[in-house]
Length: 356
Image (cartoon, rainbow, N blue to C red; front, top):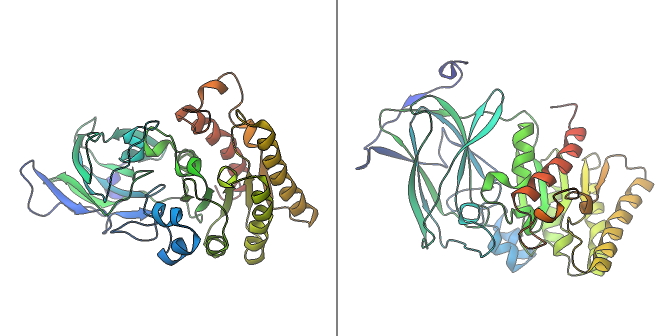
């Protein structure tokens, strides 16, 4: 096993330990490194003026920390989280471990592997404090912690054993983030923990960064957010907002328009169009929506754009277990997200094959 102490600049954990022997650090400060958010304390994914100009749902969901991660290294045998939230989101169809809590992966040369999840009490209302003991005890690890998919975080502190060491975490490959824009499915409903959203699974496997711009019920391709996304630094853009278009006519008005406005500013950006992954109810409407997206793709190709891609969402969860991949015929469970990660991940792997 590689000696990680030779790879990272480690410092002894300093500070006054609490009664449990933990020293607490703000996760937004070095050597911790944040990914997937625009700013912290409180955490947000968009500039507030862009969110407010888009719609009230985006303004609210902007503070939900879907896709946010923090990376660091430590030999602490225990990891604590002390989180302040303005509210704790609880659903009837999604575990609190996914909507409102954190999970941890160990990053190694062979990839990232899940090692721990924090399980808050369901009565939590404005945050919680929890400590998990890591299997294997005290040894140096590089770690990634995923933030909640459906709750806002005002501040996160991470607790480490007094006398342990702390340093920077693993680095992603030098590839600009993949940006995912879309609905509640994009935001992560209904993964059992944050690391099981389809974007997290894909980019963890590829060791690349991503930005989750899923806005549950409110991804409708309004011009303020479209123009903001067109200016973002990214390696690939994934459009997955079919579900939040009120109807096929609205999708027709906005889908090709979003492509054209982003393409105008980013002529060489790989652009992926995805249709919604369920056809259970109202199949006629689903077919109309899919046709709109297919027509956008064909129009782009007819103009000579060879860097645009189409993924038929209806095919993502097909197969022997297709009746087992959602919680409510709409939102994927962990099986559904795994199948989405496999299908969308194949396309992203192809697009990025020259840099992975």
